[in-house]
Length: 248
Image: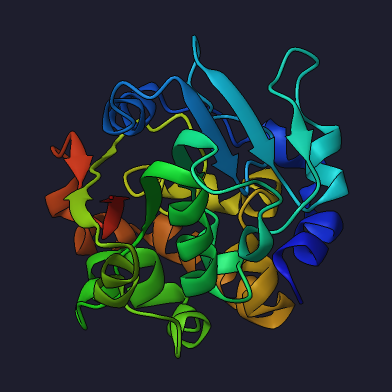
């Protein structure tokens, strides 16, 4: 299933839990530098589109386009792998938490590089073999996530394709944007159906894995096992869970 098909299926309530996290947004916008014209690829509802700049969005899902605010940037129905713009049309192109849905991430990144002088991409580093174990949700409850990233280009390959450097993105404990890792210090949130529906991982692992993970997490929260196993998280203000910016 393509990213557009997936979000046409699950994206109707996206804005209930997926909002702009200002600290992460500030890091993304700083990486855009002095760019005045910005292309947002795989833009979704436009949560991270920078204010005060001339933005055009690209989003293949009709369900997601329909949820964009009335005053959001103009949005084109297109895919990252075939951007309908001339070479160097923009000062910068950005993509936030979307390239894992692209049919061909390398081609999509090269398209961004073609149409813009600067590229900023928020993604996940799965190169480190220990990354799955840094996040208790994948380590203890949802190991199927490893199958979702199998065969996907490594971060080093993505960076090499566009000549990018990488920059770590820490996740604040009270992250406002409900992406998969956002509730690392608030485990009860994953018991909420609305939270899970805002994250594509749950749809992709399937209902059996989801039910098992939710059941086991609920049991561990009730028994105190989760708190004991993850007591080192209690005093952290931010977590390093493999989120990265690619900046080229």
